[in-house]
Length: 487
Image (cartoon, rainbow, N blue to C red):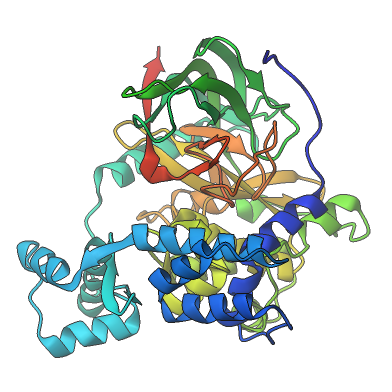
């Protein structure tokens, strides 16, 4: 029988080992590392994966050859399936979408967009397939290009207007640098629905749902109101990615529903970065060593990361100025775009730099990589953005300044359109009230442990589901969040 438990999390070494099993062979061909001596089956699997010959890879896998590399082959097959799920538009379908959305083009223009990665595609099983969000991402890129030519700022959308007004209020209410202000109370109902018959009748479904952090000063008064099923385990607050866990038997022909309801309070926090005077870092401290370290496979001090960070920062040594420079560069050079699933990308910052685009988590990982390389302690934070009519998954970070503490930084929200410096720079050293904090780390183990490869091995916002036979990917279940703003 399930019950609440506070068992400690797995070690960092165990996490890294699990991740390297999944991504190790991707590193081989994406970063031109020497191929280690392995079985003929493994070498063949890597070549087939590289070529996008996923049907042949699946056929190799189905032969059931058992060797020490079988787990890696299993992972390549699973990742190939996820890539096909992301790249699901044929060329005729993309051409039709472009025409319907008023994007007129010549064959040469389309070829140029593809070469630049603006219209993202892959050759899979000998046919060109396009990313499901390639057309909407292209339109964002074309609009950015047009704005840069005309030197005009894009019109403010509803969320941008809301943030401008809210952050101005937060600044007005902040009498002391970094104090908590503008509390908002939320009631959340979160539901995961597993599709009928993806698991045989009577089979056990294991479900991890996102659950709020309780030990953070900006997030308080967490109260669990209701669960279905009634029996659950809540992970200890000390874990990097917090969850509530359920088990349930599948019933033939019926969906399986998991649901939680809770309330909490969230605060805004704003620092005037020009008034921060950090002390010199204690470089021998455990905190400094942990949060300035590489963290495979996505926080890596590669040659490109080192070169870019050095060119942006120059001779600057003041921590707040280093952060400001890195933030501003990303704001000006990396366009927000709908993202591939993280589990299909071997190194996310590398992908962002190659394509000059990325969503909130991708931009955050790039910022973290450069900041850590430059000796600035920074940690991941994520969950949901809870702004009215804009509730969605979201990632940001926190930077540590000696003598001040952890200061929130939201890279993807960028510099706001305001002549007021504090409002413009708000998200370099501040956060709004409309957040749900689930995670303080990337790639953190679950409680209880997951038996199969995660659908999302980096972040944790939607949930995870598996059966006794394997992981259930995102196409086998759906999630929804209902939010009420409590007066």
